[in-house]
Image 1: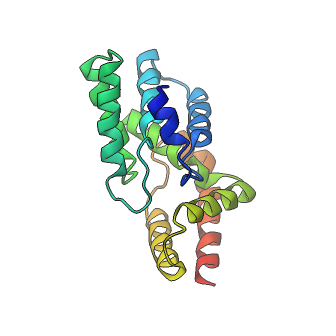
Image 2: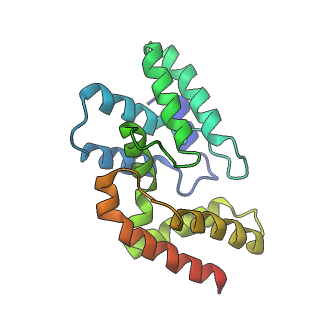
Length: 185
């Protein structure tokens, strides 16, 4: 990890999108089977840089994170094909949708969203941290925006990787439904 990257994840406005999130993602990646060493390395790099730029009110965080990854990885001497694949994967975390034949994309997106299928206690801490990251947004606007985001997850497959889906889809849907009820109250 570069000093610039470490500093980014330690910004004071971050509550969920921190080094702890990156470490959780890396731990989940370590449990994924069937990846070639180069695939695992690319996913590790994508995890490190996927939330490097995080300004809650901006819509281009993933694009800016991908650009930062391209620049940083070039400076670190990574080959252009690795840099391009890392950037492509990071961009997938914007909408969390992947093509059915995109194994690496499915793994990364599923890892990034795994918190949705956490225990109710861990999910509630995550939801609170997200609200804190959006502290400057008035409550009615936050409730509407967060609710719309959560309802979109319920309208599709949340986890594109079959292993993550089998393990986490049920708990994720229950957590999301519970949060939607709280947002509506």
